[in-house]
Length: 379
Length: 261
Image (cartoon, rainbow over all chains, first blue to last red):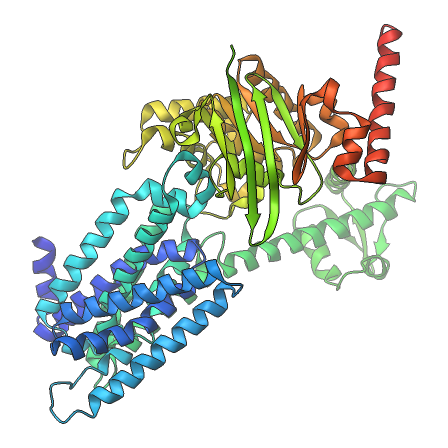
């Protein structure tokens, strides 16, 4: 309850609090289950699922006449689930490949959904108002009741994920081995896919069918950058999803007419960009620094070895040579002067008059050590 | 013991309308180290997968120790092809080897201290103790193969099916794996190994199955691994060349033996 009261203090405004809570909920659930989708290379399946859910929402409204969140979510889930099974059976029974099946189901279902929505819009009564918000999401319309519905369904999905943790890990890493152990992999596949459908449909009202797949893929992709452990990846992914949800809700509340769903997606994209750039080991910044450091080290070693090679042709081990000779030997893109200065700082070479350089005794030792290492590596 | 480890009868598998295995009858006695050899597309992997129930056969039946496979799962260990999984998966060596316990653990139960001990012992046996906490993405091909073997050891099975355990490993690892397989056989286990290198069949194995969609021959290496059978399996020249290589080698070995080396 402490957490809840903290939330109340942070968000004194009812609407903002509801939207933030709802967005955090959808972020956590889609983030956690999205981790599996990304690891199983089913990132685009989320996109197909959310698009395929649209006709389900319209049909649920047409059949029941209700705009109750739970009803619409159930309709969305049913359609999303049927779409997914259709993709799987197309892949299994025809020569059509996964990506084509995905594209077909996505566009056919989405098109059908748009047709139904248009038909609904043309009805004379006003009960249909707001149904088209499912296209791009309309977080401001969230009620506390909706958030409770989302949170309960999401909690069930997360609980199932934790109960079958070991089985889902097996399914994601080595399904054949899992089947040889006697686990029903087809059933587990359908179960995990169903959980993913749940994660997606609870976010549709807030983020919309068009952008929802970002909430499945992006937090997981960002989390993968930071960790090499499945459990940590799932937790991080959920946290990133929540962070994006809350910050998106807050940012959109500060500016009039800034749609919440799209803002959340922009927030999660920012998290992805930061992760790709800065994450330790895998981050691009780290890779750049590492390769830069390596190439500088190699450049220094090259100049040192060249100087050593020249020195060996003379009787005095400390015979001086001009920079231009070294520059000729260095076939790579220059930097000889800078390397020499750095080697001088380290006490490996010393400057003799009129631009000539010679090895110091330490430098000779170091060059001999390097030569030895290179020779061993070649063997 | 009058029972056989594996009995396969009339096994036929087809992908769409193309038969991959045709009417295979195969009997493997307990305690042999058997190679399955045959050209590419001969159905070697499919045979293993069909025995394990991973592909459903169009016809035929499989008995493990006289009973259907579903009832004998605990007796069977499986080493899939190394390339069949994504080695970038976020997990470490212990975790992968631990998967060998999942079958005995059953649904939902998590591995505990006892399982961890078994895993570390298995890693010790395959010489991978130092790599227990290593990310699997950082392993070399030979190390990946050892991890898969350790996972099978943890299964503590009576029959092991291994799909190309020597593929892409260096000579040291190959030697280590062969030693391990022979130790397992000495402990009374039955091993079925998909193998590609005809040269080493007589050195490594005591039983061999020659397969090319149909079963060509199966039995002790000395009786079955003949030039004629190899020619039937691989067709004409290829078999002849490879077989000659093998013959020269054994001749050399025999003359070495005669000289008392």
